[in-house]
Length: 344
Ligand code: SF4
Ligand code: SF4
Image 1 (cartoon, rainbow, N blue to C red):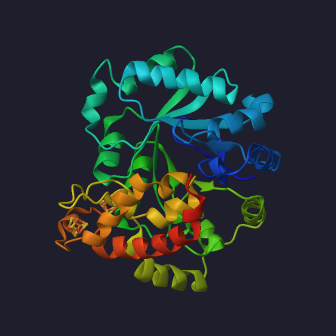
Image 2: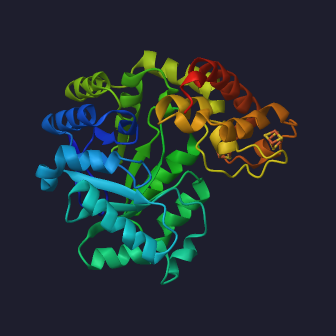
C-alpha cells in the first residue's frame, strides 16, 4: 500500500488508514476479524480514543501480537497531567502495548497557552514521552482558530481535523500551514459521518493532498472491502466527481457540523453540537443513550428554537444552524419511532 510521511513524526503511514470509532458498535469477534483483515491487507495506521468505549480493547485483542508492525494513534480528553498519565497507562493495558506511536489531546477547544502549565494534560503526555511510553504528541480539534494556534505553538507533531470534499478555504489554509510547519494532517470525518454519498469521490478528493491521511471509519467488513479495493486502484478526480463536489457542497455543505461548539450557548438550552448531528450520531455510534428520557428531554428543545440566529452568527463555518437542527431533528424522530421499543 502507498504510504506517506506523517510530518516530523517521520512515521510512514498507509494512505488508507482506519478510524476505530465505529467498531464500538461491532461485537468483539467481528471487530477482531475486521481489524485483522485490515492489517493483513496492508493498513498500518489505526486511530482510536480513550473515549471510544471498548475500541482500544478490540484493537488489543485483534492486533496485540503484531503490535510493533502497526502504528497506533489514540487520544485523551484529560484536563490534568495526572489524568493524562493515567490514560496513557490505560491505553497501554487495553491495546496490549508497551508504547503508543501518537497520543493526541482530544477535541481541544481552549487556549493553547494553557499547555504551558506544568500540570496540564500536555505536560502529562510530555512526561509519558520522556518515559518512552508515547513517541509523538498530536492534537485534535474542530475549531479553526484553535487548530491554527496549535500549529503555530510548535508543541504538536500532528493535527487531526474534520476534512472532506464539503470542506473549504479554512481547511485548505490549515493543511498548507501544517505542511509549512512539517506537521502531519489527519483527516477525520472523511465521509462526514455518512453524509457524503460517494466513497470513491471522497477517496479521490483527499488523495489530491499529499500531506493528508484520512482515517476512514469502518464498522462493517463490506466497508473495509470497499476501501481495500479503492486503495488497489485509486480513482482520480474527474469531471463527474467535480460536478458531484459542487452539487453536494450546495446541498449538504450547510449541514456539515464539525461539532466545535462555537455556536453555544443557546438561549433555550439546545445542545447544538449534539442535536445538530443527532441522526448521524444515533446511526453511527452506540445508540442506547439516545433512547433515554433524559436525552429525549434535551433533544425536544429543538422544537422550541426561537430562530434568533445567534448560533448561526457565531458558527465559524457559516452554517445555517437552525435549519440544520430542524433537518436532523426530523430524521432523528423518524429513527426514534423505529427504535424506541429498544430502550432499556
Ligand atoms: S436560533 Fe435556535 S438554536 Fe440557534 S441560538 Fe437561537 S434558539 Fe438556539
Ligand atoms: S453549528 Fe457551527 S459552530 Fe455550532 S458546533 Fe456545528 S460547526 Fe461548530
